[in-house]
Image (cartoon, rainbow, N blue to C red):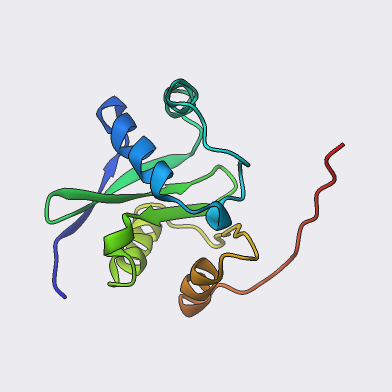
Length: 136
């Protein structure tokens, strides 16, 4: 499949799209939060500029997903459900790395998220640790 892929920096016009994208995510994909935030919480999160770089993935001029890079070079990516497994994610990741060259990138993945583990392994990422949490 041939398409025109572009990464556009997130701005306030993308807040609703990002919230809709977050609503599509299945609980198995969560690693950074336990429940769906309210819309107001989401707006405040986006406005806080939480990532070093945060982009909307556009395919043929339409918003398809988002990809970000934290200050620790951790990559997060999510595509609309119908656009997954079409090569868009790997192309977006390559564009992200091209725009932000560094020597090391990380991907924190829920161990139950087999789809994401497969995606990053296919792109050459290797497992380096398991992290455990105690909630009191």
